[in-house]
Image (cartoon, rainbow, N blue to C red):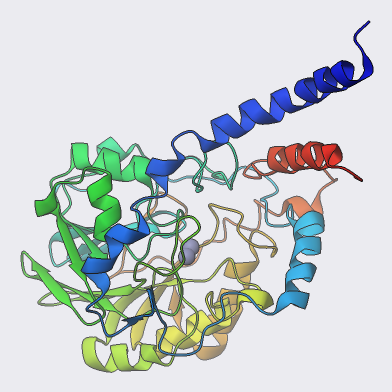
Length: 404
Ligand code: ZN
Ligand code: ZN
């Protein structure tokens, strides 16, 4: 029988073996996924009027998280309510044949903030995320609640890829790698994100980096980088790359892509300068009182749509990942109530569905039938959670600490 210290060491080694191999797996690929090192970002971004003291700043004071007492509340909420945002059943996907010729004005929504715009005969892919997990690690972090509606290889040739900011649910390494292989279009990105792309071997000639109000023209379409109220960062460093929304303006039609943003008075200025917009894609999900400044709620999205001079509103940033504590379909339900009150036109496609914006289809409720996991018996759905293993390991590790 081993002596006491040796036995303790054996037990500790056995207990740690699981977490250690898990942590190794969790860290696998992390240096690549997190993107460029902060030192490399500086020369590119330092000239921006929005960059000072080593970071980009919003125009308005914008706390990423409310004060510490809210943080404690969030930990409790995370522990007790993180399942609430899961769907009650499978999310239906539309299988769409994309036309060989791009239309005057159409949009295909792939879930979350990923969409293919067709504007005046050109195609623009926005925030494409085909990856399974939106996290630096392949082992923990939110996973998809539905499969990508179509293989990325089946996308027709696009004229530009727009990125709003470098968070994992908007800038996805496996998707970028696939697009480098399957497409020839430039990546048009906010300042600083070029360094991530260079690190991921996107050819220099396919990278266009812009500050707010900067523009780039592709085959008669003007892509204007516009203000957003948010933050950035893929790992420990915050706000070393810029976040943005985008205006896509052609000779006849105009589209606004909100990306990920809190409500900002800047919307009215963007509408006056670059609108009115035939179509707005605005984020409606992942809201919470604690981070209200950086994620608007559905009612604010309707207000922003009005500020922008929007005609048709297509909600994004919901359905695909569980990133907050609201019920799965709540964003779209609140959106429709607010839009009806203000007489706004909204389209709510299924993931994968293509919408002809010049002849928008009537609303067809497909989300109520999906429901919320919070309505069923506990433990009926765990898809997309992806963090439970992390909690288990943390619990096991903390149990080893002296005094625990
Ligand atoms: Zn974000
Ligand atoms: Zn986001």
